[in-house]
Length: 342
Image (cartoon, rainbow, N blue to C red):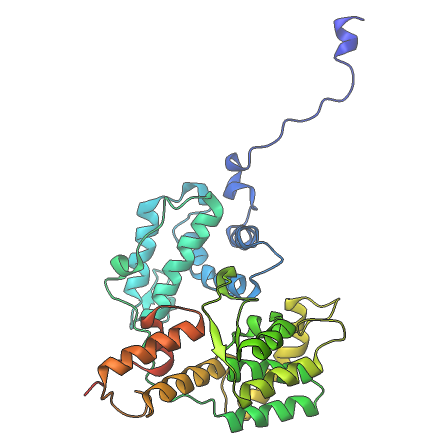
Protein backbone atom coordinates (compact mmCIF):
# COMPACT_ATOMS: atom_id res chain seq x y z
CA UNK A 1 0.00 0.00 0.00
CA UNK A 2 1.40 3.40 -0.97
CA UNK A 3 2.00 6.25 1.45
CA UNK A 4 -0.74 8.23 -0.30
CA UNK A 5 -3.27 5.49 0.37
CA UNK A 6 -2.28 5.32 4.03
CA UNK A 7 -3.09 8.97 4.44
CA UNK A 8 -6.52 8.66 2.85
CA UNK A 9 -9.68 9.28 4.80
CA UNK A 10 -10.96 12.15 6.91
CA UNK A 11 -8.48 13.41 9.43
CA UNK A 12 -9.75 14.06 12.93
CA UNK A 13 -9.25 17.65 14.00
CA UNK A 14 -6.96 18.12 17.00
CA UNK A 15 -8.73 18.60 20.31
CA UNK A 16 -8.81 22.18 21.46
CA UNK A 17 -7.18 23.04 24.74
CA UNK A 18 -9.82 24.85 26.88
CA UNK A 19 -7.11 26.93 28.56
CA UNK A 20 -6.17 28.37 25.17
CA UNK A 21 -9.73 29.39 24.42
CA UNK A 22 -11.34 32.62 25.55
CA UNK A 23 -12.67 32.43 29.12
CA UNK A 24 -11.14 28.95 29.45
CA UNK A 25 -13.58 27.58 26.91
CA UNK A 26 -16.65 28.46 28.99
CA UNK A 27 -18.12 30.85 26.42
CA UNK A 28 -17.47 34.03 24.47
CA UNK A 29 -19.54 36.29 26.72
CA UNK A 30 -17.98 36.89 30.14
CA UNK A 31 -21.34 36.83 31.91
CA UNK A 32 -22.36 33.56 30.26
CA UNK A 33 -18.95 32.03 30.92
CA UNK A 34 -19.19 32.94 34.60
CA UNK A 35 -22.51 31.10 34.92
CA UNK A 36 -21.15 28.03 33.12
CA UNK A 37 -18.03 28.02 35.31
CA UNK A 38 -20.13 28.07 38.49
CA UNK A 39 -22.40 25.32 37.16
CA UNK A 40 -19.41 23.15 36.33
CA UNK A 41 -17.75 23.89 39.66
CA UNK A 42 -20.74 22.92 41.81
CA UNK A 43 -22.27 20.52 39.23
CA UNK A 44 -25.72 21.16 37.82
CA UNK A 45 -27.34 18.46 39.94
CA UNK A 46 -26.92 20.17 43.33
CA UNK A 47 -26.25 23.41 45.24
CA UNK A 48 -29.09 25.21 43.46
CA UNK A 49 -29.37 28.04 45.95
CA UNK A 50 -25.61 28.46 46.27
CA UNK A 51 -25.15 28.65 42.51
CA UNK A 52 -27.99 31.13 42.12
CA UNK A 53 -26.54 33.35 44.83
CA UNK A 54 -23.04 33.36 43.35
CA UNK A 55 -24.40 34.01 39.85
CA UNK A 56 -26.31 37.02 41.10
CA UNK A 57 -23.27 38.43 42.92
CA UNK A 58 -20.97 37.69 39.98
CA UNK A 59 -22.90 40.24 37.90
CA UNK A 60 -21.16 43.03 39.80
CA UNK A 61 -17.73 41.62 38.91
CA UNK A 62 -18.74 41.03 35.27
CA UNK A 63 -19.98 44.62 35.03
CA UNK A 64 -16.71 45.89 36.49
CA UNK A 65 -14.71 43.79 34.02
CA UNK A 66 -16.65 45.27 31.11
CA UNK A 67 -16.04 48.81 32.38
CA UNK A 68 -12.34 48.02 32.53
CA UNK A 69 -12.38 46.50 29.01
CA UNK A 70 -11.53 43.11 30.49
CA UNK A 71 -13.23 40.56 28.24
CA UNK A 72 -11.23 37.39 28.85
CA UNK A 73 -10.86 35.73 32.25
CA UNK A 74 -7.44 34.41 31.22
CA UNK A 75 -6.13 37.99 31.39
CA UNK A 76 -7.28 38.54 34.99
CA UNK A 77 -4.43 38.60 37.49
CA UNK A 78 -4.04 39.32 41.22
CA UNK A 79 -3.64 43.10 40.77
CA UNK A 80 -6.90 43.21 38.83
CA UNK A 81 -8.75 41.32 41.58
CA UNK A 82 -7.27 43.71 44.17
CA UNK A 83 -8.38 46.60 41.96
CA UNK A 84 -11.92 45.21 42.04
CA UNK A 85 -11.61 44.96 45.84
CA UNK A 86 -10.70 48.66 45.96
CA UNK A 87 -13.79 49.43 43.86
CA UNK A 88 -15.98 47.45 46.27
CA UNK A 89 -14.37 49.23 49.23
CA UNK A 90 -15.21 52.53 47.55
CA UNK A 91 -18.88 51.54 47.58
CA UNK A 92 -19.07 51.00 51.34
CA UNK A 93 -21.87 53.24 52.60
CA UNK A 94 -21.45 55.66 49.66
CA UNK A 95 -22.26 55.45 45.97
CA UNK A 96 -19.68 54.94 43.23
CA UNK A 97 -19.71 57.28 40.25
CA UNK A 98 -18.57 55.99 36.87
CA UNK A 99 -17.10 58.30 34.21
CA UNK A 100 -20.35 58.24 32.21
CA UNK A 101 -22.28 59.56 35.21
CA UNK A 102 -23.96 56.28 36.22
CA UNK A 103 -23.97 55.46 39.93
CA UNK A 104 -23.61 52.15 41.73
CA UNK A 105 -25.53 52.00 44.99
CA UNK A 106 -23.75 51.83 48.36
CA UNK A 107 -22.98 48.40 49.80
CA UNK A 108 -23.23 47.06 53.33
CA UNK A 109 -20.08 45.61 54.88
CA UNK A 110 -21.60 42.12 54.87
CA UNK A 111 -22.51 42.24 51.17
CA UNK A 112 -19.12 43.66 50.25
CA UNK A 113 -17.52 40.65 51.93
CA UNK A 114 -19.90 38.41 49.99
CA UNK A 115 -18.87 39.99 46.67
CA UNK A 116 -15.19 39.32 47.35
CA UNK A 117 -16.01 35.76 48.40
CA UNK A 118 -17.90 35.19 45.14
CA UNK A 119 -14.97 36.48 43.08
CA UNK A 120 -12.68 34.04 44.91
CA UNK A 121 -15.04 31.17 44.10
CA UNK A 122 -15.45 32.34 40.50
CA UNK A 123 -11.71 32.52 39.86
CA UNK A 124 -11.26 29.09 41.39
CA UNK A 125 -14.08 27.75 39.19
CA UNK A 126 -12.38 29.12 36.06
CA UNK A 127 -8.76 28.32 36.89
CA UNK A 128 -8.98 25.29 39.16
CA UNK A 129 -6.69 26.85 41.77
CA UNK A 130 -6.62 29.52 44.48
CA UNK A 131 -3.81 31.64 43.01
CA UNK A 132 -6.01 34.74 42.74
CA UNK A 133 -7.72 34.37 46.11
CA UNK A 134 -7.75 37.52 48.24
CA UNK A 135 -8.77 38.22 51.82
CA UNK A 136 -11.94 40.29 52.03
CA UNK A 137 -10.95 41.57 55.44
CA UNK A 138 -7.59 42.82 54.17
CA UNK A 139 -8.99 44.26 50.94
CA UNK A 140 -11.91 46.05 52.56
CA UNK A 141 -10.17 46.97 55.78
CA UNK A 142 -13.24 46.08 57.87
CA UNK A 143 -14.57 42.88 59.39
CA UNK A 144 -18.01 41.48 58.71
CA UNK A 145 -20.44 42.03 61.58
CA UNK A 146 -22.94 39.19 61.61
CA UNK A 147 -24.33 39.77 65.09
CA UNK A 148 -28.09 39.79 65.08
CA UNK A 149 -29.79 42.80 66.65
CA UNK A 150 -33.37 42.38 65.42
CA UNK A 151 -35.92 40.41 67.43
CA UNK A 152 -36.67 36.95 66.06
CA UNK A 153 -40.04 36.63 64.31
CA UNK A 154 -40.67 32.91 64.41
CA UNK A 155 -43.18 32.15 67.15
CA UNK A 156 -44.47 28.59 67.10
CA UNK A 157 -48.04 29.89 66.93
CA UNK A 158 -47.24 31.97 63.83
CA UNK A 159 -45.47 29.02 62.20
CA UNK A 160 -48.45 26.77 62.89
CA UNK A 161 -50.77 29.35 61.36
CA UNK A 162 -48.63 29.45 58.22
CA UNK A 163 -48.57 25.64 58.11
CA UNK A 164 -52.36 25.53 58.34
CA UNK A 165 -52.59 27.99 55.43
CA UNK A 166 -50.24 25.80 53.40
CA UNK A 167 -52.23 22.66 54.18
CA UNK A 168 -55.46 24.40 53.17
CA UNK A 169 -53.91 25.21 49.77
CA UNK A 170 -52.69 21.64 49.27
CA UNK A 171 -49.02 22.13 50.19
CA UNK A 172 -48.83 19.53 52.95
CA UNK A 173 -45.15 18.81 52.36
CA UNK A 174 -44.40 22.54 52.44
CA UNK A 175 -46.08 22.67 55.83
CA UNK A 176 -43.93 19.71 56.93
CA UNK A 177 -40.78 21.66 56.02
CA UNK A 178 -41.99 24.59 58.12
CA UNK A 179 -42.55 22.33 61.11
CA UNK A 180 -39.21 20.51 60.76
CA UNK A 181 -37.34 23.79 60.40
CA UNK A 182 -38.91 25.26 63.52
CA UNK A 183 -38.94 22.13 65.68
CA UNK A 184 -35.55 20.65 64.75
CA UNK A 185 -33.61 23.67 63.52
CA UNK A 186 -33.15 22.13 60.07
CA UNK A 187 -32.20 24.03 56.98
CA UNK A 188 -34.72 23.76 54.13
CA UNK A 189 -32.59 21.24 52.21
CA UNK A 190 -32.11 19.17 55.36
CA UNK A 191 -35.85 19.06 55.97
CA UNK A 192 -36.48 17.93 52.40
CA UNK A 193 -33.86 15.16 52.36
CA UNK A 194 -33.87 13.96 55.97
CA UNK A 195 -34.33 10.21 56.40
CA UNK A 196 -37.50 10.33 58.49
CA UNK A 197 -37.55 6.58 59.19
CA UNK A 198 -34.01 6.68 60.55
CA UNK A 199 -34.90 9.59 62.83
CA UNK A 200 -37.92 7.71 64.17
CA UNK A 201 -35.82 4.61 64.88
CA UNK A 202 -33.20 6.65 66.72
CA UNK A 203 -35.85 8.37 68.82
CA UNK A 204 -37.39 5.05 69.84
CA UNK A 205 -33.96 3.70 70.75
CA UNK A 206 -32.28 6.69 72.42
CA UNK A 207 -34.77 9.54 72.77
CA UNK A 208 -32.82 11.71 70.33
CA UNK A 209 -32.08 11.85 66.61
CA UNK A 210 -29.21 13.07 64.43
CA UNK A 211 -29.52 15.50 61.51
CA UNK A 212 -27.49 13.82 58.77
CA UNK A 213 -28.97 14.16 55.28
CA UNK A 214 -28.79 17.31 53.15
CA UNK A 215 -26.37 19.09 55.46
CA UNK A 216 -24.38 22.08 54.24
CA UNK A 217 -21.15 21.09 52.56
CA UNK A 218 -22.21 17.45 52.55
CA UNK A 219 -21.31 17.04 56.21
CA UNK A 220 -22.56 13.97 58.05
CA UNK A 221 -21.74 14.27 61.70
CA UNK A 222 -23.28 12.24 64.51
CA UNK A 223 -22.46 15.01 66.99
CA UNK A 224 -25.48 16.94 65.76
CA UNK A 225 -28.04 15.04 67.78
CA UNK A 226 -31.16 16.67 69.19
CA UNK A 227 -33.31 15.39 72.03
CA UNK A 228 -36.92 14.75 71.21
CA UNK A 229 -39.81 16.57 72.84
CA UNK A 230 -43.53 16.63 72.14
CA UNK A 231 -43.27 19.44 69.58
CA UNK A 232 -40.41 17.77 67.68
CA UNK A 233 -42.12 14.39 67.67
CA UNK A 234 -45.30 15.99 66.37
CA UNK A 235 -43.39 17.63 63.51
CA UNK A 236 -41.63 14.38 62.61
CA UNK A 237 -44.83 12.33 62.70
CA UNK A 238 -46.59 14.84 60.46
CA UNK A 239 -43.73 14.74 57.93
CA UNK A 240 -43.92 10.94 57.90
CA UNK A 241 -47.66 11.13 57.40
CA UNK A 242 -47.56 13.44 54.36
CA UNK A 243 -44.42 12.15 52.61
CA UNK A 244 -44.89 10.32 49.28
CA UNK A 245 -45.64 6.63 49.56
CA UNK A 246 -42.50 4.50 49.60
CA UNK A 247 -40.18 7.41 50.26
CA UNK A 248 -37.92 7.86 53.29
CA UNK A 249 -37.99 11.66 52.91
CA UNK A 250 -40.30 14.34 51.52
CA UNK A 251 -39.34 13.73 47.88
CA UNK A 252 -41.22 11.40 45.56
CA UNK A 253 -39.44 9.07 43.14
CA UNK A 254 -39.76 11.61 40.31
CA UNK A 255 -38.93 14.67 42.44
CA UNK A 256 -35.70 16.61 42.60
CA UNK A 257 -34.83 19.15 45.24
CA UNK A 258 -35.08 21.91 42.65
CA UNK A 259 -38.56 20.84 41.55
CA UNK A 260 -39.67 20.56 45.16
CA UNK A 261 -38.45 24.09 45.87
CA UNK A 262 -40.22 25.51 42.84
CA UNK A 263 -43.52 23.65 43.06
CA UNK A 264 -43.99 22.96 46.75
CA UNK A 265 -41.96 25.44 48.77
CA UNK A 266 -41.97 28.70 46.83
CA UNK A 267 -45.78 28.99 46.99
CA UNK A 268 -45.48 28.67 50.79
CA UNK A 269 -43.14 31.64 51.20
CA UNK A 270 -45.88 34.31 50.95
CA UNK A 271 -48.03 32.24 53.32
CA UNK A 272 -45.20 32.21 55.85
CA UNK A 273 -44.73 35.95 55.48
CA UNK A 274 -48.44 36.63 55.85
CA UNK A 275 -48.31 34.81 59.21
CA UNK A 276 -45.55 37.12 60.44
CA UNK A 277 -42.52 34.91 59.72
CA UNK A 278 -40.29 36.61 57.11
CA UNK A 279 -38.37 33.56 55.82
CA UNK A 280 -37.85 29.83 56.29
CA UNK A 281 -34.43 30.62 57.76
CA UNK A 282 -36.13 32.66 60.47
CA UNK A 283 -37.71 29.42 61.71
CA UNK A 284 -34.22 28.09 62.31
CA UNK A 285 -33.41 31.22 64.30
CA UNK A 286 -36.50 30.57 66.43
CA UNK A 287 -35.20 27.08 67.18
CA UNK A 288 -31.78 28.53 68.14
CA UNK A 289 -33.39 30.99 70.52
CA UNK A 290 -35.37 28.17 72.17
CA UNK A 291 -32.16 26.19 72.79
CA UNK A 292 -30.36 29.23 74.21
CA UNK A 293 -33.19 30.24 76.53
CA UNK A 294 -33.70 26.66 77.71
CA UNK A 295 -30.07 26.44 78.84
CA UNK A 296 -29.93 29.96 80.28
CA UNK A 297 -33.39 29.61 81.83
CA UNK A 298 -33.91 33.19 80.78
CA UNK A 299 -34.25 35.48 77.75
CA UNK A 300 -31.77 35.70 74.88
CA UNK A 301 -29.48 38.74 74.41
CA UNK A 302 -31.98 40.07 71.87
CA UNK A 303 -34.40 40.63 74.74
CA UNK A 304 -32.24 41.41 77.76
CA UNK A 305 -28.52 41.97 78.56
CA UNK A 306 -26.43 38.89 79.32
CA UNK A 307 -25.93 38.37 83.05
CA UNK A 308 -24.01 35.09 83.26
CA UNK A 309 -21.13 35.08 80.80
CA UNK A 310 -20.04 31.54 81.64
CA UNK A 311 -23.46 30.05 80.98
CA UNK A 312 -23.76 32.28 77.91
CA UNK A 313 -20.72 30.56 76.39
CA UNK A 314 -22.16 27.14 77.27
CA UNK A 315 -25.47 28.05 75.63
CA UNK A 316 -23.77 29.40 72.50
CA UNK A 317 -21.72 26.24 72.12
CA UNK A 318 -24.88 24.16 72.32
CA UNK A 319 -26.72 26.38 69.84
CA UNK A 320 -23.81 26.09 67.39
CA UNK A 321 -23.68 22.31 67.80
CA UNK A 322 -27.37 21.76 67.25
CA UNK A 323 -27.41 24.07 64.24
CA UNK A 324 -24.55 22.09 62.69
CA UNK A 325 -21.91 24.84 62.79
CA UNK A 326 -19.77 23.87 65.78
CA UNK A 327 -18.44 27.43 65.98
CA UNK A 328 -19.56 29.50 68.93
CA UNK A 329 -19.26 32.76 67.01
CA UNK A 330 -21.98 31.70 64.56
CA UNK A 331 -24.53 31.61 67.37
CA UNK A 332 -24.46 35.41 67.51
CA UNK A 333 -26.10 35.57 64.09
CA UNK A 334 -29.11 33.77 65.59
CA UNK A 335 -29.43 34.81 69.23
CA UNK A 336 -27.56 38.13 69.35
CA UNK A 337 -24.12 39.29 70.39
CA UNK A 338 -22.22 39.63 73.63
CA UNK A 339 -21.82 43.39 73.48
CA UNK A 340 -24.91 43.76 75.68
CA UNK A 341 -23.28 41.80 78.48
CA UNK A 342 -23.76 43.38 81.88
